[in-house]
Structure formats: C-alpha cells, structure tokens
Image (tube, rainbow, N blue to C red; front, side, top):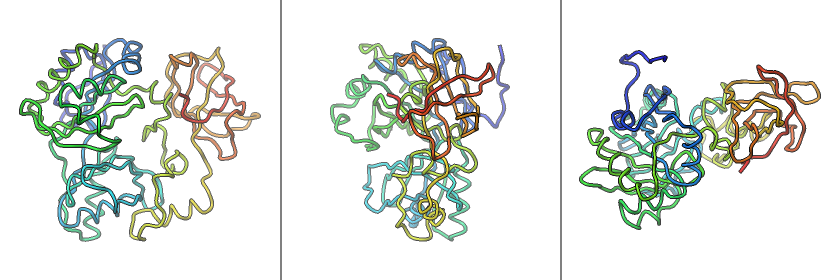
Length: 367
C-alpha cells in the first residue's frame, strides 16, 4: 500500500472523518487538498451516479471570494463573459483566460451580492491571479479563501434527497442558481450544480466544523433512495463530454478549442483580460478542436490518462487526453485534441503503450 506523507502543503477535507468512516480507498491531490476518488468499487459507484444518488466530498472545489466596492469590476475584468445581467443568486460558467487568450481555469462565478462574488475553481492558483490583477488595476477589493466546503449530491434521485432536506423550493432552482439555507443550524448555500450530467446539487457548507454532521444528515435523508458515497466520475464525465481543466487542456488551449466559445462574449470592454487575443482567435478560427474517440473492441479496457498520439492516414493529427472503458457503450472511449480539419466519423488510430488501435472520431457528448 502506498501512503501520502502528511505535510502542511496538503490539507485534509473537513469531511475527511466522514469519508474515512464511509470506506474511502483512494485520494488525489486537488487544489492542495485530498479529494476522495474511490470507495473500493468504482463500477458500483458509477452505476449509483447513473441510476440513483451519490454523495461526493468536493471540498477541494475551493472558492476565491471577491468583495468590496470594485468586486463587480474585477469579476468582469477576469471573466470574458458579460456579467451585467447576472442577478444575485445566480452563477455563470466562465472561461478565465490569460492575456494570450489561453484558458487558465473554468470556474462557476456566483454572485452572492452586488459587491460579493465566488469563483468556484478547478485545480489552479486563481487567488494569486486575481490578487495580481486587482493590484495592477488598483481596485478596491478583498480577495480571500472563505470557509466554504462544497458537498455534492449527484444523480437522478438527487433532487428527491435534497428536497426532503430543504423543501420543494429546491426543485425550482435553475442551473447554477443558488439560495442560502440552514439545516439543523448548519449554514449553507444550496446550488443546482455539480460535475456530472446526471443532475444534482452542491451544498456549500459555511462552517467547516459541522462537516461530519452535514454528511450524516444527507446520508440519512438519502437512505430511502439507496444513497452511497462516490466521487467525480471520469467515465461519466467523458460519456457526457464534460471538460476537465488541466487534463483536457494544455499550456496553449483556448476556449474555442474545447467547446467553450459560447461562453465568450467578444464585445466586452478592452480591459477584459484576454479579450483582444480571443477576438483575434475567433476571427481566424482555432487550429484544434476537442472531439471524442471510440476505439475498436480489441482496445485495452483500462483507464489511460495522458497524451497518446491520434493518427489519420499515418499522420499525427492530435492527442488523446483521457481514455476510459464506458460501461454503457461497452467500448473504450476518450477525449482528444485534434486538428480542426478532422471530422466526426473519420477513421483514426491511437498509439497506446500496448500498441496501435483503430478507432473513430465522435462528436460530443457520447451520451
């Protein structure tokens, strides 16, 4: 057994005690925190997400909180998406870019008040980026990491579980909408969100001391629906065509290459970070695109993370970013960054460690 040595650089989740009691078997490091990745039966965890309801510790989904008189100004400078009509109580999926138009994170930006925003970030030090931009622009803001720890309830039965806890008002929440609530004196923000296409909610815990109590309350409410522990699922996310920043992207990926162009508004003010570069890219078009790839039946069934060459006519046209065995499609599938001229339906080959295997490019999502 390989263990992770304790150190001050890697934090445990507030839900750590609860996940260990639930039988967690493996972790990964995400935003310098331990994130559970398996409870010992990944196939059962997958089907629980697809057919029922799962509880995920995603406290590693840290928040960058921006407050102050210039909070809205900074939020718009950082996000190349028009936020002018975003109401309080609503989130927006945004594609944060650097000055070259390169994607550096894809958070949900939530507007809690006219002068208070959260960026719910993927794995990257966006606190440092936001602080640097704020200082450079001499903006009157405070940027900090609040005591906020999301717990995700995901799957087709998630709504029933969350409604049993909070009431039927949760059924009226739209995508990325949220509302403050309490549960047995536990302060929360309840949002319709989560990193799956199976439906669900994220419970943003506002007091980490009550993490175990919250976990137990959700598990008890979910008992009639056969709830169980799980984690963000790579198989489901690839079947659903969900982007994993840092896995499906590299140091030159722009939003148009990974299907995020619809979240970019090109008519924003020129002081929006990356907007001039994004206009140039949009004018000439991206050189790469994200497509799915489905391998032949004889391909290996194990997960393959990394850059494996995708070939067409013997010529390299791109690379895979992750391959998995799909339990519903019964084939090895994955995501790839390939030349813009490649088309869904085209025959390709993928050069894996075990050999070269035939495949077909597919549009996304697979399912």
